[in-house]
Structure formats: C-alpha cells, structure tokens
Length: 145
Image: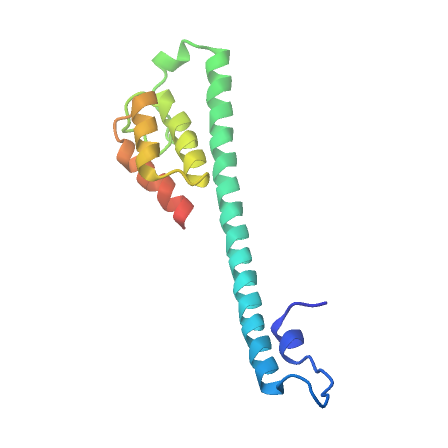
C-alpha cells in the first residue's frame, strides 16, 4: 500500500447505513497524509545529514591515515617538516597531531548526542588544544546543519 497524500486522501470507502461520518474520515485521512509527508521529509533530511557526516568522517579518516603513513615512514619528518598548504584549517591550534584526533572525537560525541559542555570538558582533559572553542563551534555547527 502506497503511503502518499494521493493514495491516503483519495481512498474511497463503501458507505453503509450505520457507518462512520464521511467528513470525519476525510479529515482524519488528511491528518494522516500530513503526518506521512512530514515523516518522509524528515527522513530525507536525516539521510542528507547522515551523508554529509559520513563524508566528514571519511575525510577525517583519510587525513589521519595519511598522517599515520607519513609518521610511520619517517618519524623525524614530524619535527622537520613545515605545515603544508593543505593543512587543516586548525593550524593555529597547539599540539598539532592532537587536532585531528580531537576533531574526530568531538564529531563522534556530537553525533552521539553528547552535550557541547561534556565534549568541551572531555577535550580539555585529554587534548592539548589552543582553541578548543573554535573546534567545537565547527563540529557542532556541522552536526546541527
């Protein structure tokens, strides 16, 4: 059975002698059709949001793999290599390698429904970041979008 406005509202029922009031049935079907449309829209928006978040996590994982491969190939490069032009937008943070990990942790916490204050407290206890507030702003705004 299709759950769209047309099939819900245009459904005909036989009229019996002691049946329901047709106007009440039509009004109820209209309410159901409205709710189905809202649920479908909500589902589409959630799927779009999920796709954006999956892309963000994938990008972060790729960045972490690249950094890990570089570090495994030559640990001395970490100290000698200047930041590249495509460095993450958080280059102003202190503790360079902690930034990507902190961002991934914050994103995971945000997606899990953790409050911003809890995420801030966790990051402050476990990461050395120069501008934790900016990182949290970016993460929570991307999750809320």
